[in-house]
Amino acid sequence: MKLLIIILIFFVLVGLDKVVTAANVIQFGKHNPEANRYDVEKNMAAKWFFEKLGLFWGSLIYLVISLITIMIAFFLFKWIFSESIALYSLGLVYSFVIFNNLYWLLKFSKVI
Image 1 (cartoon, rainbow, N blue to C red):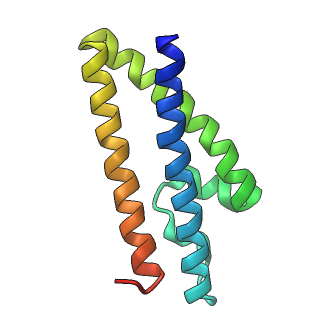
Image 2 (image 1 turned 180 degrees about the vertical axis):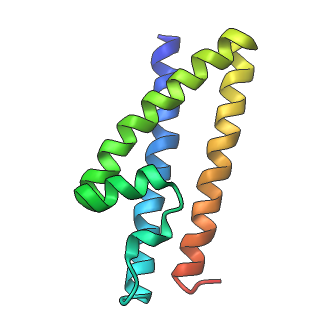
């Protein structure tokens, strides 16, 4: 049951990251129609999936890859440190990523 809750926490964090990233791509494309809208994505792997599969399917496939990656990182951190340190560390890193994406979303939306 505890593993299910950890997976749910990671799913929410990764899912929120992908939703905000997709919103960034849309806003950037809306305000810069002459540019490649996927250029806003700095992660080369995610950008490749977006260009090959489109925004929706690229985000969905990359969500699965990101979940697998964060679970591997969690188990490696848990093996080296403790479960709580691993969970807090990865939660902190993903929270920074989400807030960074939110900042850029507000910037591309011309709110700030």
